[in-house]
Length: 173
Image 1 (tube, helix red, strand yellow):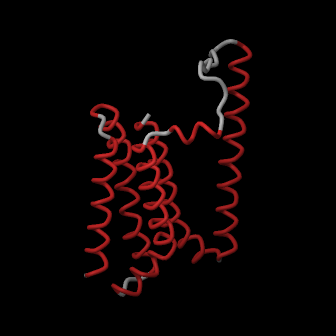
Image 2 (cartoon, rainbow, N blue to C red):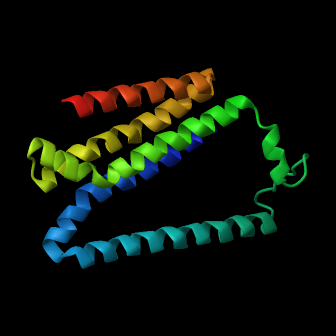
């Protein structure tokens, strides 16, 4: 399961990296309206792909190519959330707070690198995209290691510790 989540994060980070690299080029060549329209087209294609995937999955179940898994616990109930373990809540809290810190920073990271290090906008977007490309390889690898060795909380806390240390290094230099 962690490998699947790592692969999903890999694709997400690859999309973010392409955004950091390509959108400044699109906006400098054709203007901001073309860059925004390109993003709208990409989101529309993604949504259409998801709809096609749902239709193909439903068709495969009807034809009998795949068998829907029967849930022995019954349908999902909101009151079952209170029975989650404290480990699950800790992982959810760490993930939520980490992404609450990452996404606002990502939205202004290019401007911060531009101003702090006096880089041009195109070079600053390349610098910012490095971490996204590293995450493209690191997320599936971490997912594989977690699936193989377990200890999800240890890995999560270790990743949070590294993120905090790197933030202090980045802010202090």
